Image (cartoon, rainbow, N blue to C red; front, top):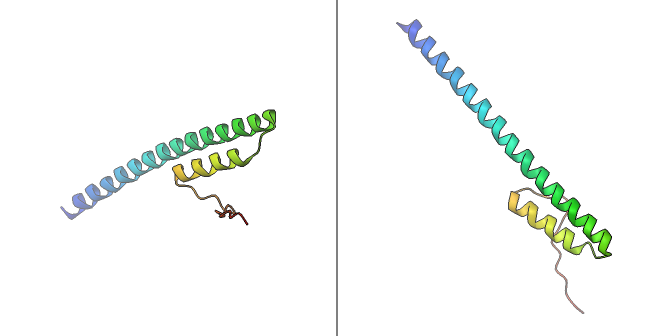
Length: 85
């Protein structure tokens, strides 16, 4: 009887492992797609800024907004307050 309970517990753990692996794979796919979309958007903005001779301030602001929305952290980017003297 104890042997049967151990087999049931092992099969439950195997099922849990499979379900977690499926979840992680699906989540990674979603994150990769979102990252790809954000990179394409930034690339388009950079291309537009270069073609129009505009500033990169709007591009940087868009990138910051995109990283905030995705919950990602952009290392090396700090918020600076601009004060007029």
